[in-house]
Image 1 (cartoon, rainbow, N blue to C red):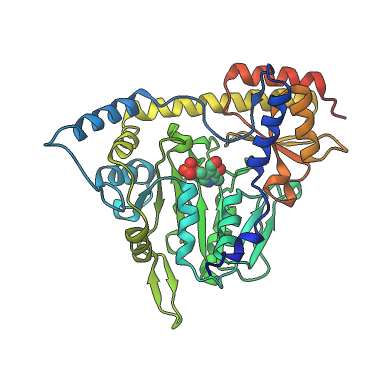
Image 2: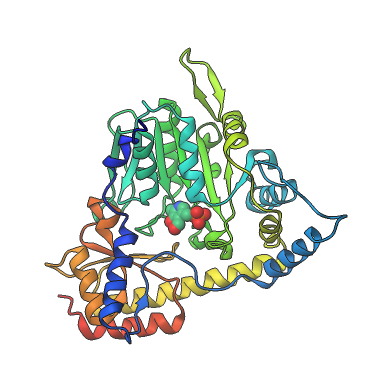
Length: 402
Ligand code: PLP
């Protein structure tokens, strides 16, 4: 008899975005002519930039000729892309990360879910609450049930505090989804020191790195002393270059970072990852990697940063206007996300429904990210300027914040 992986029954019934989508579709069925504005799901809306498109077209042409055709690629990624990442994302910032410490993949969602194969199921995991649900769900599916939640609330400025108990795997997301908060150097140094003292590993998700605007927010965890011994960093082209549908990401696994075997001997994470990927991953397409490479030129960088600037300006506008209406709003300065407190007496889902039904604006209920998300909704700045303006106009009409 083929038995089910019982861990799946420990997952919540449905993902928050599935419920949001269901509610949206039900509303549209009843009101087919309604023009909903979607400021919920964190997907980009601006198209790929010229440098990326041109590079991809060229790559397609190369694959169409016998002399330049390529078959299977390299599992860790092509050197041309790994070298550019090392140079532009790290060396230019004075961070010592070499191309052989960079591993290309098809999205941070996948990387964050896949890396956990390397860790023992007995490890204790620390995740924040609220949290990007992938960290929690993938560990539960794997059968790793010892999860410690680090509460991030208004009281601690949404900054995760060190746990009292010893944990082995620590997920940090900065800039944060969903709260938009950031960890400054002193916050991150505490976590790196903790990880060194406890032989833990930090899984540092920095897919929103390009949204950092404040000078005292590190762009990489490797700016922190000692981080190369204890941290793996996840980065993605999704939000940086509009690759949410194209799919390309990278993970930094420093030479120094290790796990421990039963005899307390060090095992290099790089070797384990390569072993895993060789069996389970076919690499990212040549066309995609050439497209990603194209952002690493003066022009390519300028184009993607213009797009990020556009989203940040939207965020600034939405935040300012929501505050004028009377809302308490967090995030938005280093992030595409605004973490908005719902009016007194409302719940996250109740307020989501109100905005859907009365303002025809879709948001994401904070409680979908964990119990500490209750009382908030997440609004994204990924819409167009016009949509953001119209959303504010509609919200102002129907909401009365005390
Ligand atoms: N990590 C965080 C914190 C995210 O919010 C998202 C997407 O919204 C991802 C990872 C997924 O990134 P990718 O598109 O590279 O899979």
